[in-house]
Length: 101
Image (cartoon, rainbow, N blue to C red; front, side, top):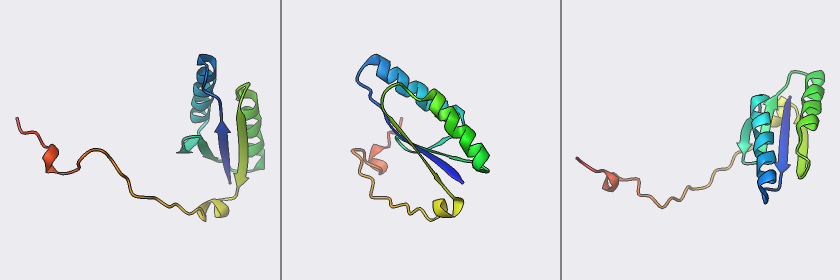
């Protein structure tokens, strides 16, 4: 099963930004991978492991902001649909950018 963490933390003050950075680093050190900017997921083996992960998140959550945790089975997770739009950049991806020295 997967534990998915969604968070929306304030980043207005320097203290807010520090708390955001600390929480994000905690998630990465705990084995979470980034799905999107404020969405991280981790594979867990069973409910006991899941409970310990959730308790650890509760201990390390920032004082302000919203942190949500969702647990889904691997079957549910594998049915996620990924839709990617066209990437638009300001840079040319052709030979026109090539500089010969």
